[in-house]
Image 1 (spheres, rainbow, N blue to C red):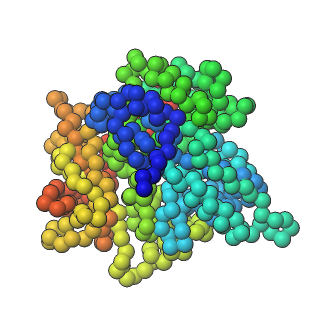
Image 2: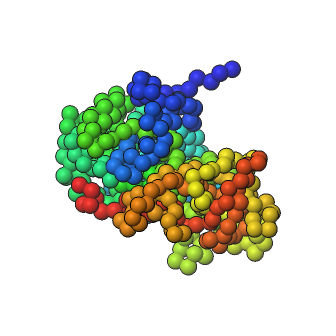
Length: 426
């Protein structure tokens, strides 16, 4: 029996504009447009691109014990998170396996929003509800926290690339005020009638300085009935900057080149340790423990402290020699220098904005580009292996009869702009 795919408010626009559509997380989503993945990828690194991300879900957590619940259910220590700031982490089960990764937005001490992946709103909301009883609020009062699943009640789009702020200035009501003191992973506004962030037509929105490409940009949350107009207005405002719509194909290659994981693919049904994303765990100063207890923390610490490493798995980023890639998944193998299979490939994509020159990777955005440099593209991604590997280790990735040579690295695309000062881009 065929499953009916969900659609975002922009679905008709995608189809009218030549998008190649496919099922992603139960949603009918654009993989790429007539421009193609390569040009969409390059547009973000060179100027700007927009993405329909309304397939993602939001969960509101409110009340006196909102922070206590999130401290229990999210890997990051949120005690020091300030109003108007957001933070990336993961939601684990008792085994230390990833239910989903998530960004937590703090409005105030009793109001938080959690942004999760496509189709995960109900699952995460249920997880939160199931663990409310685990809270100890004190004998003087009952636990006070409300969990609200906003799945398909909030629309979202991203604009990514160095010209994002210049383009948004044309559609925001008060851009100079909004962009003032807006560091990476901060946000302004909400969806209420008195939101401090608004479009020129008065529509409220939440504007977050974040994204999934490694490049400077913003994520925007808005009412579903306003997203189509916002999308069209931003496309019009971005014409002088060659702004284009981008699909999930470019989103995937951009995030791989930025060493960012895809939930349920690069993190999932195994312990969330020994990864490139250790910053998502609340390690104490000597890395021997955590600054808080959370669901899954005991399982993670028992894995880290185990002297017997049998069964322990490690995730590493890699780069290839050129743009050739292989299929990822259970049919793939990671082969070490002795010809032994030691794991599988989680992600293998091609970052088309980079290339090799004298054994060094350059990006088309690198300030020190060698004369005549042309980015031919380099494959990159993540492997899951059964042993610890040193940076620089050479491996072979194989899928059936196809093989590529790769190197373990700690970073891929250089000179990414996501963390740059906003004053550099306006």
